[in-house]
Length: 163
Image (cartoon, rainbow, N blue to C red):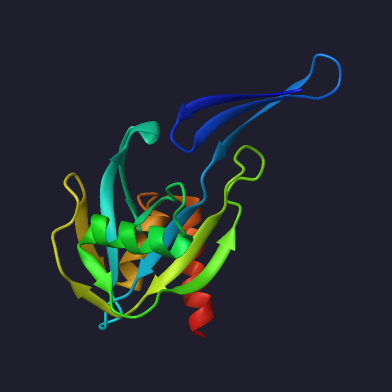
């Protein structure tokens, strides 16, 4: 038996029974995209925002859940523009996809590279946009300020693919 409880658009709590009086709980979420935006000077666009679950500010790449009927590419393009005010002038390049937490969440993270960027608007309200070097991001990771594991994986995947 499996119960599916709607929490908000694209997010469900699954209560799956297995065995006698045993249950396993996990979240069913829409897939989400992470965009690694690299400027011509090899610096990265990073956003900073308050994250309620960790009760603090986090530094991360632009990202977001895929809306119903939307492709991962369209999600990535939309999130990049909304969160940074930048648009990629050429097709985004897929660099990775993986399950960020397969023990408790059923969704995938699909990661894209944006390296032909043009600023066309302002970032979304409530977000702070930063332009950082690879060294600065690694420093933030070491200080646990850039601490979303999926975003760290996308960053290192990009660095590894470059070689």
